[in-house]
Image (cartoon, rainbow, N blue to C red; front, top):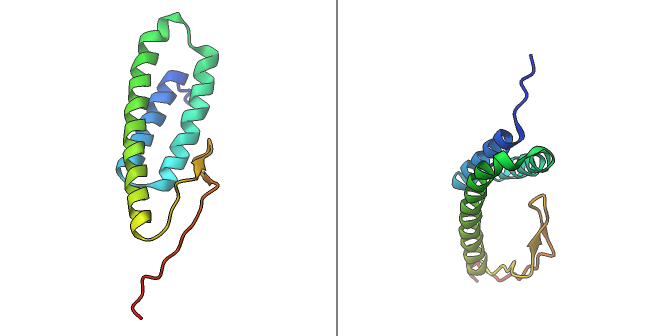
Amino acid sequence: MTTTVAPLDALELALQAERRALLEHDVDALLQSTQAKLDALAAAERTAGPDDMARVGELHELNRANAVLLARRRREVAWTLRHLGRVEASSTYNGSGYATGARVNSRWLGCG
């Protein structure tokens, strides 16, 4: 038996999965939840009506909170990379969450 989930419900589930993935540092789950979020958002854009605007606003706030958490994680990663002698400042991420244009600087960390 197949259960159909309403687009806004699917979007909320994807946003909650995204938040869990960010909190648990689970990259694979983050990539999966990002794709689920994009798919649910596309479906919601096709079907959402005026009665759904309050719920859309709530989901917007959840997405914004996830964005704040993601920015914090990116700062942590950038800090770690800098201290390891690697720089990713010129990179950007595509819609699937993969880095494009990453630049690498290496430095010797061993004892001589």
